[in-house]
Length: 304
Image (cartoon, rainbow, N blue to C red; front, side, top):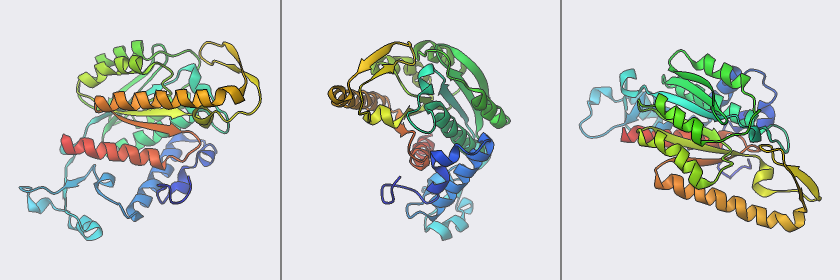
């Protein structure tokens, strides 16, 4: 990410090429998140989002004895201390392991990048004393770790073992998941959404209607976003195995228009149902995505 384009201090810790050299998801998550949080502390727009596990903005009627004066000295803003009973919630990652997540035009695959992202989100939630869990899925639920204060390492182990081996379909597994999330919580759905936007929304609706707060991460390889190919070749559909001959010069602009329409349709539909949606480019550092999550989470905490 270039300077001046929204990069947050500490972004050097979150370059995907560097992350790929770190063998442990636990070490990766702690390195990324701690570096990112330290960067946010130095950033000019520092706000409640870093400390929302322990603080919230002061409102009229709050007990002045709960104001954290050290935070006031650092930020020139009033925040009150919250206790674990005020803030603990269930946080689960819904993690797509369908075959299309294998794709990588350079460096790391969507599955690897999504694993880094999911590990960081889980560590953030764990750091905030939330109960953490994960469900991996393709055409069905593959692995299920229910939210618990003791499941951080189990979540990382599940991510470590995740393999993208079968075609995917959101509908059936997400309908099954709705049975497990009747207690309101925060759900982070990580997928490449290779389905019609209407079908995506239909699959997600049961989770949203149960009162869960949904934060959606649409993981795409840079080649899927800009189709930067120059030579005629045969392209394979990773889900079906079908080979399709393509002449890039004649197809590229049509493809880019289609991907823009797909993203715009998802953006509109998620917005209509108050679901936070972020497109994630696997060539970019994680700082923008993490900040998007923190901003979403801060809004959720304000309305609870």
